[in-house]
Length: 356
Image 1 (cartoon, rainbow, N blue to C red):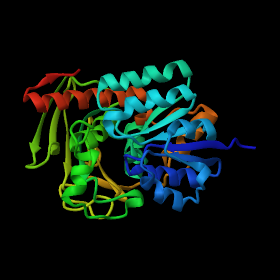
Image 2 (image 1 turned 180 degrees about the vertical axis):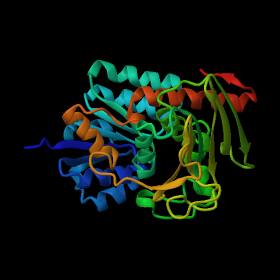
Image 3 (image 1 turned 120 degrees about the horizontal axis):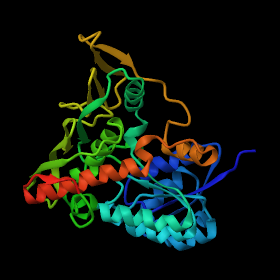
Image 4 (image 1 turned 45 degrees about the horizontal axis):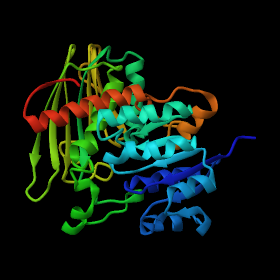
């Protein structure tokens, strides 16, 4: 008999909580045993969607943890509060899946790692783009040596804006008051397109580059009148093997999961012997090699368990000891955080900086 993993969702700041709870609900070896948020109205959809009763819904996270006794806790707080919430939850001896980004700063990320260490439990960061078949197919081809050593990544990431869609990608048109009230648009709470999306480029780029560490980072962002956070940033990242870049954008013409905007969201990877372009959610990736410089399309792999979503992947890891997929490893995510931190400071100072 497989163990039934008891899973709770705590803090609904990020709308991805609804997607993650659905993955728990649909997993045959997981039970969604509790949810908690200080604002009850933010839990209404989850309560309804997953048939949760009064005894499973809490406004006090301590009561949730003490009474439901989860094995795994999903955390979705605002970016600037990741460290705070790990420090609150870690003493309860649970595994933690933190929704991206890793943290609001490198210091906070390191504090999260330190908070978990005495308890011997897993801390991992979910990057939703990892589960896109194009990303996994591109990485498989890299591992097979199809384009040789990867020396550059070029990333463009974004969407129309974080308030234009909720759990399960339900569409919504935000007004100015909603933006003013949202942590996504608060500088103090880690808002802005750079902190929302650059972690994807920096973390998945690090994965595709085999863990390479950059030397220097230079970033610029745009200021939008009436907002205190950026909605567009461009970062150049210098390695000893070449230059890479990542661009983040709120305000794309369309969302990439419905219609790819121009420029397309996704990655172009340059290796010593070829290139791969893998654009978000597309059914093919494009490959060039020395033998076929004209290029050819490769259908994305059919992704099967345990690599379809973070819930099944983490449970498989905990049950079998199988390695975590690259971006869920803390060393890969920590390198991504170093790049993001340096880029943020570069944009503020207007200077090129050595990697922090």
